Length: 460
Image 1: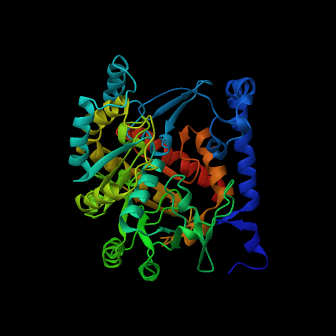
Image 2 (image 1 turned 120 degrees about the vertical axis):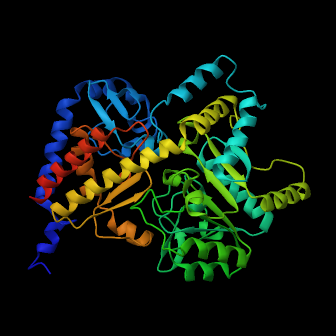
Image 3 (image 1 turned 90 degrees about the vertical axis):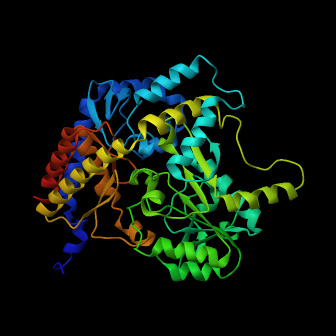
């Protein structure tokens, strides 16, 4: 126990004055070294709402955004002339590197043959075979984003079960599907605070449980109104939470017992290895979803039904009145997506690539962990395949409530800017770092050295 009011002067083990001094110093350094980016934004960003083309860009903690000139492999160059080692990789969208050559080649080839025509191509047929080879025997559909894929999967689940609710986990993220934006308030499912324009009570269509709490899941399923459990294999987009050893087997058993479908969203955990966490750990979902990097950075997602669910879907589809199904978007399953999907699955997403990513992610995790221990920081490191996170709190974490408490936004913002000033970019929403097949050992060592230097300033 710290004496007197010392507890209030510390955050994540750091003296608050020392943290504030670092944050101010690094902000000044960033502004001083990015004058061209600042001038370009001042000239051209005002036409966008809040000065950014996507409001998520406001979540970067820098005083202003760097303006990117080009990206290749695991490197970004900004218009101020700085080369940046990219460990964010488009928040997984470019997990296999920026513009992998087979994908770039496929784009050039398809661009001469048409961009969209709502009919299949030979690439579409080959991509279907490759999807099954990589991810398992599912009946596939193509979407533009994983948000869409999850939304459509939930429609199928409700149609075949006749039930209204989806079970999700506190702190989860499955894109911007309305139904999942719920949280637990003293054991009750309520809308998450801060939602823009949300007028519906989402507890009518969703029930929230804590990750790793099988008893809570069973209690929710026992009500008989849950169509599907929608989960990531590992909680991401928060402070990363690993599943207990028997958690996924328990979910499968409970879903089957109570007549709910199990949907596995692998959009972030595709970092786990070939076929994602599902294949690596032998999971058995009824519906499989993956997006982001599956087509090498071209906006693409896929969702697939098991054979048994596909039969039930066909029955429900045949029995419904004529009219709109509520699923699908005009530009989904376009030939450019299939060209990139085929190139990624056949030439980029390989066993060799994953082996390289795994080996180098281990190197990064070991280096970050060693720096944390050397400085006596009350932090920890978590890794899932090529995905590595440092968490500014002791661990391991077991659920979303603990993950929310472990977030230290003030600390994370200062560390992120300090790392970028040292040439290393990590994800803005949390402390996620990805290793791509193009990431070099020297880039990893530069990140470890930069992290150690920042901790020296914080914990000296």
